[in-house]
Amino acid sequence: MTQSALAGLVGVRRETIIRLENGKYNPSLKLAMDIAKVFGTSVEELFGFED
Image (cartoon, rainbow, N blue to C red; front, side, top):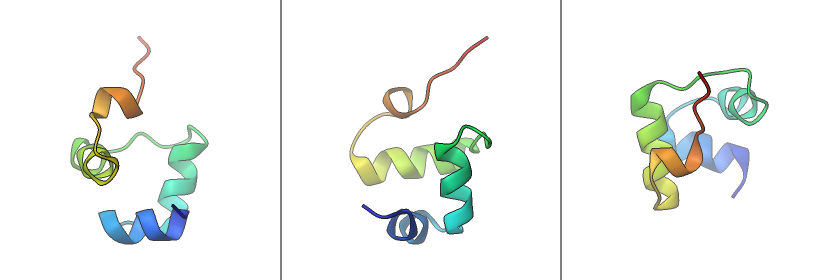
């Protein structure tokens, strides 16, 4: 899936997806859940959390 396609499906700009991929942006809970839904997985599977 392209960055543009994912951005369109979850309602953000492509730049937001790029920043997520580069670890320079922490998604909102809604965005994280929307992305997980697109890929048919859980938020925990997609995003790691470090203390």
